[in-house]
Length: 487
Image 1 (cartoon, rainbow, N blue to C red):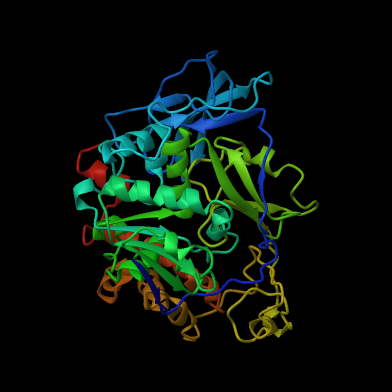
Image 2 (image 1 turned 135 degrees about the vertical axis):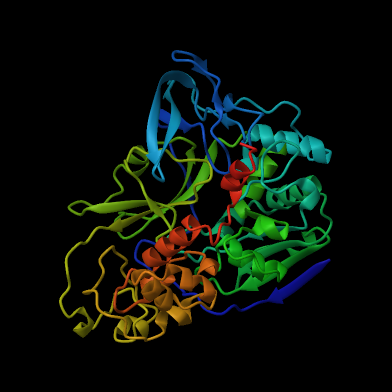
């Protein structure tokens, strides 16, 4: 049965008409890189055991990392080649181990098919085995549950499946473009995941308003509900999209898995189809590569492990310093090295122009292209003008003027300026009484602040201080499993 519901949530911001954010509809399949770096930890996964040695010849799709005794999913070679060496790289202040494979130019495409794949007529256990072997179970904020150790949510506790089709964050991957020409594959993948999770209803697809014709509603499986909502950031964050779909609040500081929800993207569903029906491991990923520092924004289908310097070659503007982020323009994490590999859970690479110049009295400029929520700029009124995003503060830091911009945009209805003052004056524990733990760290408060206060930094520091004092501790994901002694 098909249902159509429109839900409008408070707060958020519509990042539209951004320079470097117009991707078009074409998804380019890149040439194979000369080498790939395959991290042994990708997505929701502990680091797996390495199964190859230096000098060994491997094929695309071959499992090169696996550990059935930890919460993890296998990783694969994404090209045909030879194991050249092993490499350690930094991600999120942690060291990760990677296998470097040099491409064999005598053999281009193709992959080792998954054993037992080939049709959609599979039992739930067979689907779980194939998704595990393909590495698809590592996707989503908390993994996809199966009979293997792949999620912090057990199969018996799954109540909802949520497909996140929103893309409100600047330069993020427009998920709906992956449906063009692949609607049947998406529908089959959705049915496979439903069968794996033993769900006949409570399945939700969330899309932005205006995409009513994106899916043929008559072909939707029974029990699937469509939700159309504003494509405002951070509605595309897993916590918010879960609440939009299910109507259940995600616990403060928690993840959707605590409501019994499994959250996946449109691309994740297509990966499930490819794994079960085509026998294809997760060795390629569609990425959005955009931002004001790129020559041309592109949607690219690239092998997992592709170094970013190879991916961005010839597409960075000359004579500017760029900051490369893994993810969108708001929550993306800067990379330590431009040679950082693409991982199987990446959705976007955002390249911003690095600008450290102070702008004296910037609020006196017309600001036709300034990206700001402040009402002093003309860009706030001419919404169709292309606006420019960069790393500059766009003005000097000043005392809080109690404008309430941060409150107005906060999707949780919080008071970020209050938390900032409490943390700065040494009263972080007081912020707990006013709901600081409910912050999902979207960063809109810092973006909106006309005084350029580091509100998000203060909130993160306050949450860390509260956790260290033992007054609040809410471990999630792999950290939760580690605390329970399961890792």
